[in-house]
Image (cartoon, rainbow, N blue to C red; front, side):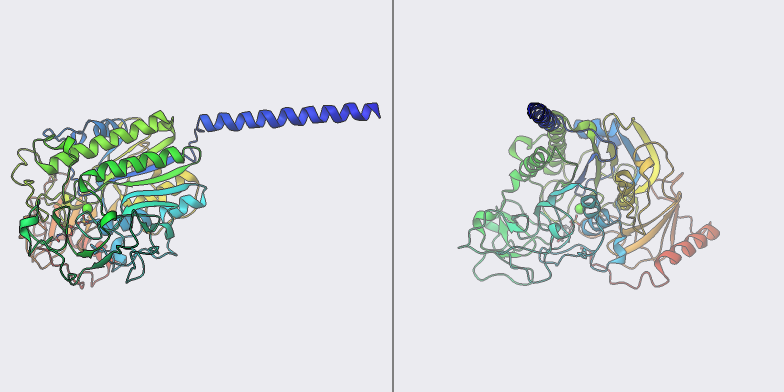
Length: 522
Ligand code: NG6
Ligand code: CA
């Protein structure tokens, strides 16, 4: 009996000891996040319309981007990194799905009322990571459509980011220049007053509502082309919107708002592996720097918002650092397409550009099939795991799907994505051999150092943006090895190479690749 009592007491003490020491361990874990190389946090930072020559690390001398430069120069800085397309929606589609956007006819610049263009059954990076135990979040620009047509903005808006893999979402629906000009958190418009419901229409105005076209006297930013519909905060937008007064965002606070939310997301999920897609709105139009950045670049609002974006990333990195997460977080930075100066507002972007070269040495810009349309700043940074390296490997944002899958041990792969984890980590420079480039539904082929652009109808230079679009009545062939600026069309002098490129291209795209409805570009 006594013996029994003694052993029960001993067992009790043992259990107590095990339990309390377990509890201690849990507490310790909570204080110092676990460092893991197979389940690191993953953060995509994605700028909007940031060109190849826009960062100090990519040769810019007239604009200061110290925070991004520090990451680029201490990570793997890619000189041949591509967005999938020269506009936003298709690039974002490819980034998240690992699928070429020209396979989806809806993957083109969307209005704010467009339905979701990612199939909810389709593979996405956040879904793949969720299956591996990650918490997933998006903060910032979405522009992949919401709902299934005819969205009621006053109820839960679905399907959207939360239905294609994101546990958390806080987004702007389309672009900063398109209505609705409200933040949408997990499917609900933030700060919406039910007594002041939102209505959105891209065809016609609501009775009595002012527009940029009819009420220029109330504008504090003038439109140059397009952008003459509803007016919000004195800025004329694309599309018409009524109601939702209390929910409307303040443009000058947008960068701070998304930064704060991204920081909060990190803090809230530091004890589990997380994937954050932080999609900045800068330097897309309308360029609305917070007053503390006004004048910071000497280049007008476009330069100022680049300085502001750089500051935001600096602050964001500080948060990762102070939370003890920097060595356990793989950061991927890139842009959705190349640069544009006049994208529809009079904002001094052209007048104040000075010596700054947004596209660097490249030809073209946003909307263009020339290199500057899709070749963008692209780097990875992972403190303690990546050694500083400049890589000339050809990589596409498409490749993040399969590469991240290998990083986290997922077997999921997509057809168009290439598993290039070692390239992203700077261990080898063996990138892709071949990539289809896209600009407003036109496509071209890069194979090794050669680029072939098929003939396309349309203006050679866009009337309003003044960007060289790469349309021509003849085939164009460039050798980037000694002609990075695409000045010498070698199609005539090198017919064999041209034929080889056409054959490769048609094998991927089919013979009727240009039998498509082209976007009308102003
Ligand atoms: C264009 C807009 C441009 C920009 C672009 C989308 C006009 C005349 N131009 O149609 O200002 O909003 O769409 O940019 O409306 S993207 O980066 O989201 O693809
Ligand atoms: Ca863009």
